[in-house]
Amino acid sequence: MNKKTVVILVFVLILFAAFAALTQEAGFFSPSAGADISAGWVRPAEWFRSNAGGMALEESQSSFTALRNEYALAVIFAHHSEVPDFLLPYYDDYLLELRRLYKNGIQIRTQWILKDSGGNIRVNAVFSASNDANAQTDHSINTEGGAGFIEIFDSNSLLLTEYRYFENGAKSRVDYEFNDNHLISSVISRSDSDDNYIRMYADSYRYNRSSSLRAIERVFYNDMQPDEEPFVINFPGRLMETAGDIFISERINVYPDFFGDAALENNKIVYETDERGRVLSQTFYDERNNVIWVIQNTWQNNRITSTLKNEDGVLFLAEYEYSSDGDKLLEKNYRNGVLERIVRSEGNFEYEELYINNIMVMTAVWEDGRKISESRAR
Image 1 (tube, rainbow, N blue to C red):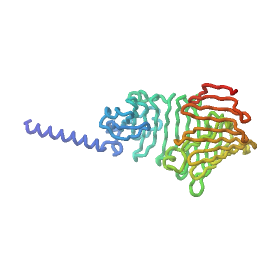
Image 2 (image 1 turned 135 degrees about the horizontal axis):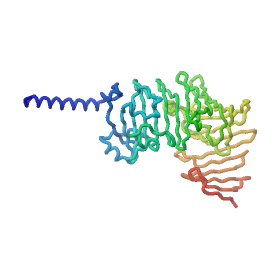
Image 3 (image 1 turned 180 degrees about the vertical axis):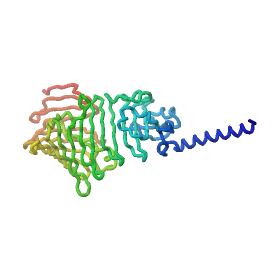
């Protein structure tokens, strides 16, 4: 082989290598361009400056550059062998996008996104680092004892099932049902000691002719205590994103401690809402459809300023005050117009005062929900 041939061959190899690098960077071999990921055409990790929510804010040239930020995000179009064991029951020849979030150089969260050939998300799973500390080498992560969730979507991007995992080991499941893209029901279940999901309660959603949500009816399948927090209305996350400012998505704090009631099997609650999805009233029925109590909520912008409960003619009133940031600063509780309780919030601390006949008789200090002191008033 003469020198001229060698030079031409080297030149051709250099061109081929350059072409391969350019086409890879341009996305020709990425899953979004329709490449067969099972054949091994996967892109290297892309690194970004991120925030605490895991958003890709700014692309970085390397992992070293990205990890110099407080938050960094690695996005990887991975091979199907990277699908962890706990997601295999939901896998169906999907494309895998793997996202790892770092804080100060330490991985704190992993997200798996499974997409079908049309680019629709079919499975979305997120777990904290306590679950996937070995995610880069061990793909059969343990979902016990850590916070996270798994979302299952249909081909129209409607959320069908949502699994939630809590740090205390508890697990819940929400099954959603749609009719013409309108959410018509959600069934909430909780896992027992044998890892079986037991139905706790179900919500049915009613709409007016303009498709605005007007009422929600909740039916209980099991006896539930107040500390189990059954009074949380469930909506699919994508529904709330699509609705934007139409619905009030923050959690509704309408049950101070002295409102607590145990919900028994076959009891139900009917929620009446306004056009923005704000709960205006709640009516609690027993198994014979008798009214146990009625609650009326008063709103100012996106905050509840007072909640009035009528139970057998006894009126329980809770009033709230908020900071400019929307944090609750003060709560006052009355029974038939007589003050019984005041709670002031300052950061992680709450200062509780109990009253009898409008005279303060006891004070307590709470830190992060735990009582640290209690004293009787002289």
